[in-house]
Length: 186
Image (tube, rainbow, N blue to C red):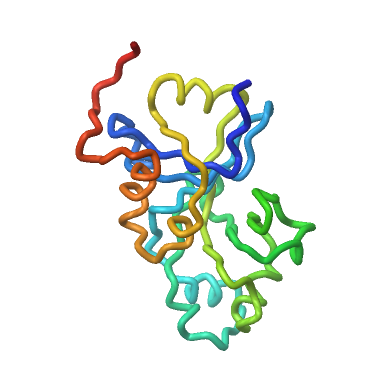
């Protein structure tokens, strides 16, 4: 297995035409010999956080919070709500630790706290996730479907969702205008 890539961005190459992943940036939350789990951080659902809270009958005291968009985290379990956040170990029973002070949580408690304004300082709500079986992601990387780069939290938590793909390639010194959709190996 390649070096584990959790706490990295997967940045799709232009030739990746799958509508779930075209021009996508994925936060890899877990990557080991059993496969990988990630959240697409630059595609939105038609929902705002308030819609999800209303559906779950969670009252909110934060009008600003309820207007936040909800990410389309990937095609796996699109009804599952997941929160990427920086709340330390407060929700550890239902969390995957991605890095120091960066977690993926499925707890309803975090939504209750966020709705009351006592949740994490930085958080993104997604529906669904992206997943790969053993060796599948490594094969896709070898096929030039993905670039990898360390996570940049300013991009991760940016409100400029439509710019995340371009900004993520710039971490590597690549201008998306110069990326080809042709595949090849040297």
